[in-house]
Image 1 (cartoon, helix red, strand yellow):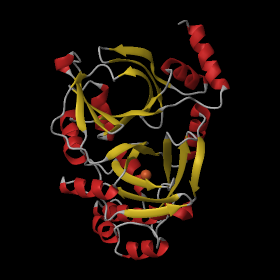
Image 2: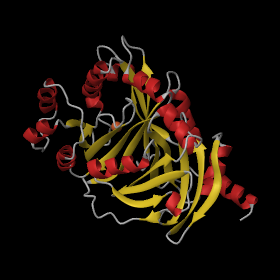
Image 3: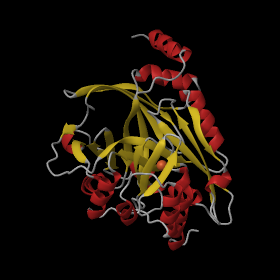
Image 4: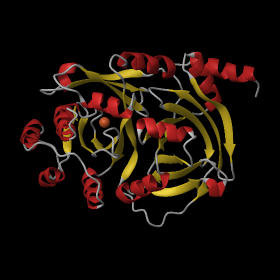
Length: 372
Ligand code: FE2
């Protein structure tokens, strides 16, 4: 394949309506201790450890575990020494998501097209191959130090020694529903425009300040998506309030923009949450007044109310139906990254009706940390 062929394919893609994306490939976390992060994801969330790459398999400078549940793949990577970029990243940001990787039909053409549309290169197209599979990979810079890899995969992800996990018990998580970014004050519209220009994404929802403000703080949020719902990337920006918002707190402790939360879909949120609670996963509680309001707002929904209240699940509805969701507490020492579990019963929104309750719950935690 000559350079001209690649450019030609990129031009053909550019001529089409949008950038061909097949969904999230995987999320790669850069952490201080990949071994322990993998154990956490396995024991508390039920991910299986399906692959390993490290000194024993010929990779001298890092250790990575590949974890899977349903269609969700996480890679967690730690460094063997202080001179490696992973160590520097962890020193700056704490544990976090380095790569929101996207599956594409052609990683070389995707890269060329993104660059042509003004994206900054993070990794030129290259091939990784083993007896499990072959991947053409490339990457571009996104917000903060985060990147988007393009992954063109044939077979299973190469480069990992396969592991059979006989310990992990899944908790019902099926796929990544959305991945949320926190960006600096004044930068949201830059990234909205960037996703429109580079990927051909469009704006799905718009919340103004008033829609998600409490007595003390506010944020603005816009959702970028591919138009089909395969990739949904909400972007948050802090807004002026009486006190420091949770987004400001994130930006301060993550030292810049980055992934705030990862929402994973489950077919049965009650089951997933009661299961993960027994494993020690902690989730955010809502104020007592929340349910009186919810049952009044949504009198007809078919859920076990007592169980919903016991587990402190959040509910919301829109034109399409309703949804149940819950947020984990912080996953690391710094108040940065957390998980959401979501069960959609027709609703396509993101829990707008819960933003205020969620916000107040987060602020209570933020206040305990002395950061409000
Ligand atoms: Fe979310």
